[in-house]
Image (cartoon, rainbow, N blue to C red; front, side):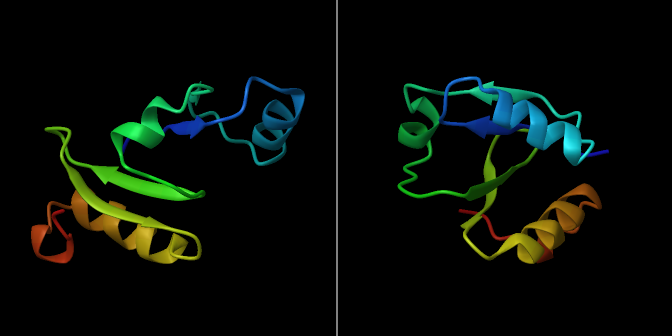
Length: 88
């Protein structure tokens, strides 16, 4: 499968743990309270989505209501259909 991680800008909290448990998500969650990922990805809003290829290059970036587009990008990258991915 395609690895997925959550990065949240808030400190660890019971709310995050409860949300993950309610949705039965067992993904790694990284707390980035200093905003290093925001700076690294030049992101100024949440939610934001990034799909990285095996070399660590951003293949897709989006945010807000683009969740379905995100799913299509992950599936395209996982199946190595590079014509369906936007290289940034």
